[in-house]
Amino acid sequence: MSALIRRDSVRAILIAFLLQLAAPACDPTASVDPNDQTKLAPGVSLIASVSTITASAASWNEIDLTWQTSPSASGYQIFRSTTGATGSYAQINSVSGNTSRYADVGLTASSQYCYEVRSFKYTGKTINYSAFSSAACATTLPPPIIPPSEIDAVPQEYKILVRWKDNSDNEDGFRVEGFSAGQPTQYFTVPANTTSTYFNSYYLLTEQQWCFRVYAFNAIASIPSNTTDCTTLPASPTSLSATPLGQSITLDWTDNSAVEDGYKVYRSENGASFAEIATLPPNTVTYSDVGVQADVSYTYHVQAAKDGGNSYSSNDAFVVIPTTVPSPPVNTDVGFGYEPNFVTLYVSWSDASTNESGFRIEYALPSDLNNWYYYTQTDPNVTFFQNQYSAYYPPPDMCIRVIAFNALGDSPPSNVSCATVDYTQIEIVADGGGVARRNDSTPRIPTAGSRAKGPKSSAGVVTNRGASANPTRVKKIPRGLAPTPKVPPIR
Image 1 (cartoon, rainbow, N blue to C red):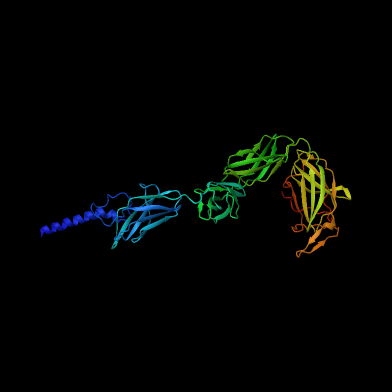
Image 2 (cartoon, rainbow, N blue to C red; image 1 turned 90 degrees about the vertical axis):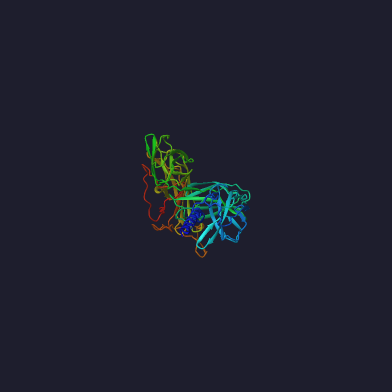
């Protein structure tokens, strides 16, 4: 009896020892080293192993695997490495026991992938795993179209410039994808051989980051760039002012952005093109321009800089350090233009000074050139103004003169130019398309505050920003003679 007990005890100990050795092969959650066979009990074969597999590239984004099946296997687990045959493997799928092939798709072109397969068998509630096959590697084919690279997103005032490098010679076009947190993804396409485009969307807001990816596509495939690029439109500075202090000009503005890389200051002299004069650190709100001269009209604006681009410009600020009153404008000319439902007043002149703060336009009736009335004023360096009236309320015949002004006073007035309204040229087109000509020469005054009946005006720059230090006294407009513009001129 004691001998029988000893045999049963030895048998139990041996079985427990063998199960302990085999346990790692039965644990699907254990970390797996496909090449580690040491945890299998010596001489114990739980299930037939997959001896060899073959891997072959089927296309630029697919590799096909094949192996010989075993009648004792319930299925096969497929593992993949992107770091070579001896690299780290991760399971990508499982297939049934009668399956001898697998297509791995969605891969990257011209890239190597390695695979190993092991079989498994269900025995009741237990799963037994074989050893891993030897590794098989293959490299995907070159892409049918080479994706773009060097994606670059640059803020450009109210839009974003997206640039890339075109690496293919067989694309049908490019698809640009823009995405931002909390906003719907935006897609738009451009023709082949394009290397840049502008992104301007209803969803594009300042201070909100947008990222971009570019796809090259043709009839076979659409392949994205390997990288993206992100940028943010910075909010524009506002409330720019320019104050002369001795022989320098101090600029002040409001910083409205939290993402700017810095600020750029631009200056124009006597109406010439703007040139950058300073690049400043982020959060800067003031700048002193010491490189100025007396009797020169300067115009400034400021932009927030970001990722090689910039925000929309601030308002323009105008300033001059005068030593004399400005010279009078010359060659003033006035005329009327006609189009259906509108009459437009055109005024032009030549700027003969370099130190004006602006121009004031005055008018008088041709029958009374002794009484002049204020019409409007413009910024410095402006030489053109127009004002549009409704044909229902045309302006009267009028004469115009222009005066330059600065902090020291007014120039003498320019020459006087007069124009007569030709009522036979005024056309009123009804909604139904009917045309009527106006022969009534009585000017009508727009209703105050009426947008539909008020004039539209424009000049070279935004007007009504400055005032004459010593303006010429002009009388108020007699009601019934001429309409006063109710809408400030626009740039």
